[in-house]
Image (cartoon, rainbow, N blue to C red; front, side):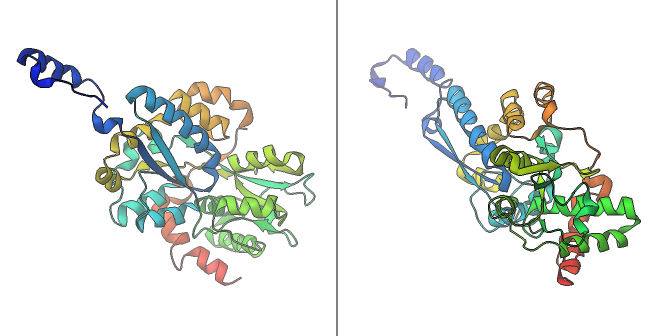
Amino acid sequence: MTVRRDFIKIPLALAAAATLGMAALPSFAQQQALTLLNVSYDPTRELYAEFNQAFAKYWKAKTGQDVTIKQSHGGSGKQARSVIDGLDADVVTLGLAGDIDALVTNGGWVARDWQKRLPHNSAPYTSTIVLVVRQGNPKGIKDWDDLVKPGVSVITPNPKTSGGARWNYLAAWEFAKRKIGGDARAKEFVGKLYANVPVLDTGARGSSITFAQRNQGDVFISWENEAYLLEKEFGSKVDVVYPSISILAEPPVAVVDRNVDRKGTRAAAEEYLKFLYTEDGQDIAGKNFYRPAVSQKAQAKYAKQFPKLNLFTIEQGFGGWSKADKEHFADGGSFDQIYTRK
């Protein structure tokens, strides 16, 4: 805090000069400790634990202000609903664009142009969906069609609450549509897959625990980064299998406009998300097994850990998230039809 001493005794000209000089210094408000809340999806815990420390150091050096970033994690759709219901998020870093769009249409928490505010459609890193199996792959899982075989137990979270689960579902659907032909056959295929799912956790991390710690299931449909974290933690107990085709997952980020304007945290919240696109931010993403979206340096550094894959986008396969949500995940959509028949 700037302390003003004997101001009345200072000549008028000097007082004016001092006032101009003080304009370049951080204000009293800026000097107060700041807290931001990042509402995120399940598998980003490790990523943001490291990223938050780096950002706090950066912000302190830039402004002189201490900042603490609190985290909330859960299934992406469930997290979006929590913000709509009043969870006081400054930023959201969710699993899919449709969940942030829900914050636009349900209360105007986020501005409609949110994807245009940051590079790469506000997705600073990407990922994909892979298959995690037990050591030695005893069930011989090689591709999506192995997941519908009798006797294969599949672990995947609930698409009603988890963004990762929606990526999983759509990746399997598109595989079947291309290999077998047509949406009707794809629906039948995905129905068989979910008939092999013994439990639907609310989020990807819950399914990860079900598979790796509770030893349920033969195969876990997983975010790529989560698969590598399991491999890192459990070593040779699990193997990662890349299917013949998968989906390009683009987890997006956004400032929660209604909250930051009310709390006066917009400047810090915007800078927090911009920092994801810096070389430091992109390197942290790669270190935590996300694919850096914009930094060529980080992409080159981590290229060996990310195999080149046959990936399709949500637009190519399903015409975008709005259409996919309506057809597959809305009440009465294809998932409800498939799962209620089980």
